[in-house]
Amino acid sequence: MPPILQAIHVQKYYGAFQALKDVSLSVDRGEVVCIIGPSGSGKSTLLRCASQLESIDGGVITVDGEIAGYRRSGETLVPLGDVQIARQRQNVGMVFQRFNLFPHRSVLENLLEGPVRVQKRPVEECRKEALALLERVGLAAKAAAYPNELSGGQQQRVAIARALAMRPKILLFDEPTSALDPELVGEVLSVMKELAKSGMTMVVVTHEIAFCREVADRVVFMDGGAIIAAGSPEDMIVRPQNPRVASFISAVL
Amino acid sequence: MPFKQSRADAAGNNIGVAMQDLAGIDFQRLRISRPIPYRQIAASILLFVFLIFIAHAFWVGAIEWHYVSDYLFSAPILKGVRGTIVMTICAMVIGIFLGTAVAMMRMSANPALRWAATGYIWLFRGVPALLQLLLWFNLALIFPTLSLFGFFPVNTVDVMTPFVAALLGLGIQQGAYTAEVVRGGILSVDRGQMEAAQSIGMTRLRAMLTIVLPQAMRVIVPPIGNETIGMVKLTSLASVIQYSEVLRTVGDVYYANSRVIELLIVAGIWYMVIVTVLSIGQSYIEKYFSKGWGRAAEAPKALPDGPAAMGAA
Image (cartoon, rainbow over all chains, first blue to last red; front, side):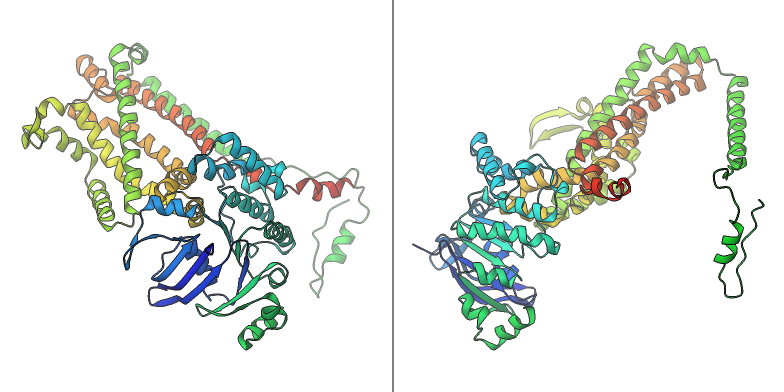
């Protein structure tokens, strides 16, 4: 079985600045990978490339064996059209730092927007599934509320449910707790832990080292746009081998 | 008990003096006096005199008020009112459609679309509306017939009626203004909304239409309301090219009976009525698009056990 997500020699430039330098990463089905590293190290950029919010300038990203954003024709990659790219994005769920719920839609409508309007699945089925998802993140009572009536932690849990409602093959988290008040971080992390236990394939960019140690199957350390080291939480966090990783861990713990 | 001005001592500490001033007061009987609002009274009297003056001027002026009431609901005037309303609605519909399309073009990744949009805004915002009406109306002078690459030829005079010329002139120039309003509205929506919509599988166009634009409406509606009210009055320009809107129909009447001021008052009343109705409509539209943004939604839910609850305890 192919890896769910595969980045092969990925390069990304913003003008002259190289944000990703020859990044290769493979995520298997059911695996939870946490990416840590200092700010500006390219962690978020890698996620944004994987979810096709940014284009890449070199290398290949595949999702479930399918090349993201391109069609292969011999030795060249031909860009796909908007509609195909939108279809591919449905496989990759994204949870943003700033939640990005749709403020003009109720919580339930936020969850139904994708499955009903984009995937054209039957409304009743989607509604049942959406309510079950809200139950799962502990917000069944808030189905009719609008996002601005919720706390940050609640909004982020709704955002996770919205991503799950698309039945994605992989879920990407871009610093999901960085915009939260400290006392609200725990509720979001516990939802993520529960998701990880249920077998969801996840890539999490985070500064929550304790979460990485507890939940991650593999921890990846990025710096300066490149992957410096990767390994089990034991090797990366508890007893880091790489000196650069060790100094980062000791600084944030 | 006389209430003395408290004075600061050498150290600037006046607490002791203030305490002394309060000594011996029966707080049960202490009253705070309400000064007489002289300024408000003076302003009200001035306003009243001014209104009397205006009313008197209209009273003694040679205005035959019965002409106003006779013509207010007369058939030709109502026809003109209908013309004004129809033209306002049609021109605004064209303006809003054009404006939205041009705003999206102006923000497109495609440079050809961007340049086309910029050029359109530059041209039609730069030329006076009256001049544009006259250009459209007199199109037959340079193009006696219009056709689609030689097919379906028609006489320009038959097509370019006063209605069509006014509609094109007003609608197209309105589109140029509306485009900038819509662009401002789109820019006011957080970039993350577009990304979130794309992440659940929407194309850019669909995300723009179903997620970004509805939120932009909150910012767009007030200035569009403003422009609609401006359009009501701008339609009076169409009287110059013989479109029968209210100003033209009152003109036709006063050319015949010479009651100029009376009929202008009639037109003024109708403009005020239309604008008032539109303003009320606008507030309803604003309410609709502020869904999810109400003040109640912004207030923290924790209020009940806040200061009020503490006071009760």
